[in-house]
Image (cartoon, rainbow, N blue to C red; front, side, top):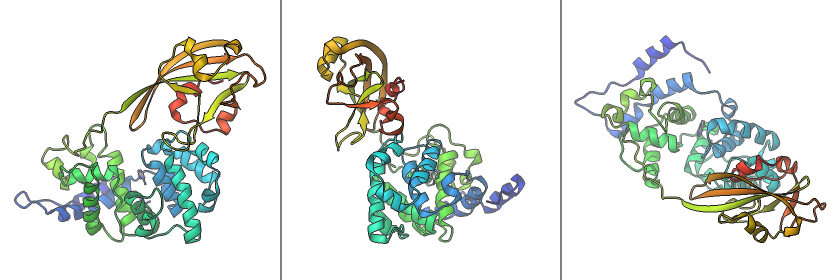
Length: 378
Ligand code: ADE
């Protein structure tokens, strides 16, 4: 990407920025159109170098966009590289075994994203000969692909002139247009998609969409003070002009999360540790977990709760508390390490899988919710 000098850049912005007359405020779509020039110039100068941007093939764009939902760029980078190495194409993803897929996704959270990737890959193989469709409407039919992801793939990988409105874009556009519409409402997103489709530069859709996302990520930031002094859209931003940056965007506060107390157990016998597979549906479906039950148990309640023979328990050690926040529920956990007498796996209740500790690293996917405790397994 050509990088201009700073002086060049400043001159360009001044030339490209639209001066709004005080006595004649711009209509909505004129205001959106006025973003195009400064936005594209800014993106070409400031785009971060990211692994999925170097070679925007459809499969790579798709995987990165799914990973980037609900996950920060820095956290995604190592997962992206590892995923692409293990599953380099649609066919490999369509055939991957569930446990291996979960292991590759371990720690990223929202595991249904990965399951939908596999389902979509199977559809792409069956219905499109393994080639990702390029049309927005076709992409929308695939599991796990909504209007944002369909727009991102169609525009970034195929140059199609469709918008890609995610949380970053909702924030930027709400501010530029001084909109008080609630950005968590589907209707707000649809409203933005419709207007941006009309006003975006048809031949530069990839950079336009990525530019808006990038401004939302590094300038018009989600938490904390936006860097309006560095923003290429400052001259057209109505929220800035009307001093509304602190009020916008409008976002209804989410419902309070339910609090669930749980007792987690590191149950060890020699080099083995107990795990079990969770149910096929509900929270953390089909992943592995450490033995745990609802409630805050006392030491003397552990044997009954986990089906242990008290004669076979050698040591019980209380562990630190931990907390994990899901979207609708919070787990407030206490923990114990229970060391069983080493009877070559015979002391371990049959309800559990008796896994080698090393297998927790390379075989079984245990979600982050148990991270505070899995770290203590050595
Ligand atoms: N967040 C969502 N999509 C992104 C992308 N393509 N690049 C950087 N951050 C993003």
